[in-house]
Length: 572
Image (cartoon, rainbow, N blue to C red; front, side, top):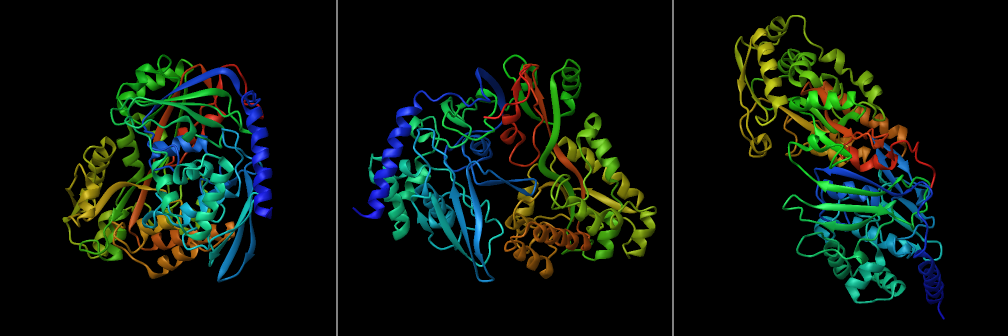
């Protein structure tokens, strides 16, 4: 018997023992039996495997454990899932070991090197190469070596990869993909088939299964055998139709989950609801709801808070920003852009546009980092935005000094469907008039389309993502078509490229600060405020605080929720 065959037999025997016990597995000790929380949800579940939509990401955060995740720019490891470490590093290559502890899928089958090899194949061959998954630093890495018995793989990257801790995303069970791709029912044999396909580079069958097997639609329900999870919750059932707007996704505590933080509620029910009257049903139909900030809802939310309902506002992961176009007159010269941006009264805009919600719109002084992010305070200090773009005492004199004629017209693009943007434009227009500029209303219901087709605008008021990766920064601030300022910088492009290769967290922070400083030096943007969302919870749920970021406050917070009077979640 070969070593590989012997190990497969041992693994199969272990799996049988696990399966024989999993039917009566108890709930994690932190979970309160029969507890349930109903959530008004603006998302939609389209895949129970690789996240495709923001709704998928909400569910995946709770159903798929990972080696590490990003939290406001900081890597947070999950040592209960496994460990990642650099084995060897040089200028030309680095080798990283992804080493699992003892997690299992919710059907009792252990995660092992086959699952890691599949995750590598998907990440390394993302997009045009076949797998429908977000690209990562795995692209271009070499086929891993693996150890079945130790449940680990060693990945060698060409050069260095800054996202080495988060690059490998385990979202699909290898034994399920192997069964679908090759018709192999035995889970361990199916795993071996996946490993062999990855080793041989024969990826078509497993890529097809990976992409299609976990799709969610009303026409093709996803069976229990494909809704497997490695995180604290598993998708118990999916009802309704996302396209019709009535999808209901029920998550139930994963009895095979062995980490310390497993949540307190046995069930979390996401009920799709994008209506404007969701707030009327909190405490009745819904226990928790995440809502866009709306002036019309302020009094009702305030009254609920006064009646001991929970309320929190957090950043959505986007920043309200005024961007100046640097490739055409009248803002082509840096002096003109400086005079223009220093005429913008940021605090007045927040007060006028946010109204009663002013406190929810946190002022911000950086373009690539948000308050609370690792490096934000240093970026504010070193970038010098507060000083370089502070409101001018005499805006008209600054305009004249920049050589800009009086009544120069600036075409400002903004989203006419946004109440905040409409009010902000009016405030900016008044301030610009006082400074001797003329603000032209170039509002459009689809400003992104105007930018995409090269439409006419001199400045655009919009929300931009707080970038998480070098690719995010490059799209918004690099030399490509996604940069609406059209301001380029060879130094910045080099810094962005370098950021993708830096593994030391302190050096990464310093490079991000240098990128921010370079953007500020071009005088092409002035950030106004973090774009918020509001979370409201009934009296039946405690400790609903939300977490900032574009992945959604409700994606990372539910493990902290507890039934009223139950106290903080216990260790699992």
